[in-house]
Length: 449
Ligand SMILES: Cc1cc2nc3c(=O)[nH]c(=O)nc-3n(C[C@H](O)[C@H](O)[C@H](O)COP(=O)(O)OP(=O)(O)OC[C@H]3O[C@@H](n4cnc5c(N)ncnc54)[C@H](O)[C@@H]3O)c2cc1C
Image (spheres, rainbow, N blue to C red):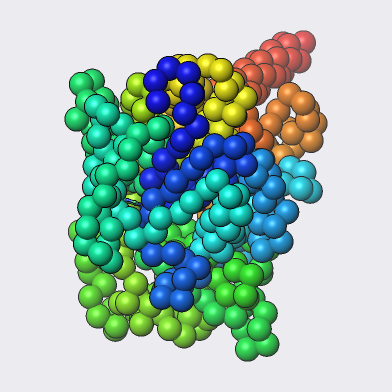
């Protein structure tokens, strides 16, 4: 594809959340889209369905889902979470609403069901074709297109150019090829913590064993566990814990059933009776790592673009990774569909310029929210700060918006949200200082009388 989009052909690598959504968007707009995915077809009978793993989807994600006509369908399989439910080691519960308005809820959605819906939506468009079991092994930067290994046949195929969009996740093969380009920036940073998914099954009567409309958190300073509700009455729990820790518990010290049970009984005593398969899950499920990926630029000429985790994986503590990937799809989809006469290379540059600064901000926010969730959510200071935020918002609804609300319940670009929150707090601090000074002067005057 050179200059103007004479050729209507798009190749998408990866049929995960971003790849499938983008395929639906571009297919609906009339592009000829071929999607290549390393895994087998999740709709096929040989596909092994994973355990119920969920994601928090919020306003940004629903906006992009709405663009392909899926917002209501996804909402129909979602479980709303109205706030955080904190669990102390003594088993005491404390609820903090997420938002300031009644519609400020985040939605817990099954990752596999969402992916399936997106694939079906894209596939319903006659000009989108899926090629499963095709693993990308490299991009042809000079001529465009990619090499794929067809997993079940062991053969390699070359797919010719058009615009190729890498949606192949944090360890993207398309990005790996682009990393060889002169002046391509790339960094990946791992947290010292890993994660393990565990399960709380439905109660005997089939209902949720904990409050269903909340995201449950067991904050324990250097580590934490969270649980998100599933539609079937179960919860997916995720333990975030250091890989190694000389001073405290870590994945490397939890080596046998006895230690695991003792650790859970000490730290999460109210959860243990609800986790009958705790030990099996702990040893059967892998320990995942948490990576932040930054790269630039997210395009090469008019031949390649990167979307979602392929260009910017963020750690999951703001629940925004998939929402941001969907935001990329909306931004790139808007540019490619609304401005069909423009030079594709220029549109890709515009896409990168619009998104990069905001996603860098999100990456920092996500890391700082980890500290907030595990260290502060249980503290009185944190609760007072949240109360103060809500009160200020009630008193000055237009002037004061909590950062969490702007990130989660609006589409305000991430950096604008962070800058605005900083301005608001500067103003509150100055106002408090001024009031303090006036009070001191008044007291001094009264004493001098
Ligand atoms: C523990 C955890 C919890 C999370 N919770 C949330 C949350 O609550 N809310 C939220 O918004 N985000 C969350 N995220 C982030 C979210 O999962 C990702 O941001 C999102 O999945 C990114 O979508 P993607 O399509 O870019 O990548 P992926 O979902 O990783 O999809 C990539 C696709 O590409 C395929 N692929 C990979 N390599 C190749 C190849 N070489 N050739 C062909 N295909 C390939 C993969 O099989 C996959 O289908 C969480 C992440 C983690 C780790």
